Amino acid sequence: MIDILAVGELLIDFTPVKTDSVKCFQPNPGGAPCNMLAMASSMGASTAFVGKVGNDQFGKTLRQTLVDAGINVDGLTLSDETPTTLAFVHLTDDGDRSFSFYRKGCADVMLSKEDIPYDLVDQAKVIHFGSLSFTDEPSKSTVLELLDYAKSKGKLISYDPNYRPALWPSKEAAVEGMMLGIKYADMIKVSDEEAVLLTGESDYKKAAKKLYDMGIKLVTVTLGEAGSLYYHESSTGIVEGFKSQVKDTTGAGDSFFGATVSEILKVGFDNLDKNSIRQALKTGNAAASLVIEGYGGIPSIPKKALVEKRKL
Image (spheres, rainbow, N blue to C red):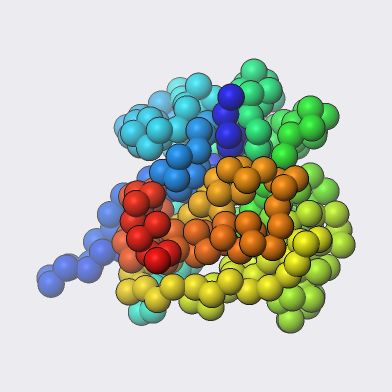
């Protein structure tokens, strides 16, 4: 069995690094679904990935990165026709980031229905996906087909709307695309910004309630240094975050969700109560607080022992 199977983008993030004499970009493996898997894998979950990279040096490096992180790559396709997707990260002085993408016609959006490994889907307890698969075809139709199949098999589905303005023609198009995933989701992770964008509610608790009312059983909202908020039939509340020396916030939400979902699986989704949810989110908050102390997504994923130590 596989605890978590994720589908979506795997790419190279070029992260700015300053030295005494020059500012340069350091290539780091990334992509939200794989950041999430790497964190879950570090916490002891069995994981697998479905996606496409170029059969180039970047793609081969990314494949090896997943292998090294303990992620099953049987569902990863290396394409001779399309290059690996690239993203350049822009950091503010406080570590917040935005992205420029080199993605049109690149490998991750060219994932086709023929690339779906149904045998891996059958083995998975949780199917995880993000909205960036919906920005282009054929990846949009491919992921929707995979989700329809997973839903028909009764799989638990987790969703990260993951708003990236540069990849959509307009904010309205982004919201429409992000809402596509809502009907599939049993669990969702949204940032504070995404919560407002998707619901129109500036009060995060009201926003979470609105998402819950759309049929999502567990809603989580990341609040930066303030921690995270959750909404579930058993309870709702905020779980405090941890202080960090912030360098780069890339992968913060992904690592939060990877650690949270891996903890939820230990309890069982149908067995969740107030205490187990709060403990899972505390683990997620601790993981995220460690990731943002390094540069890049996957390279900053901490070991389980460090996460447990941070929680104390």
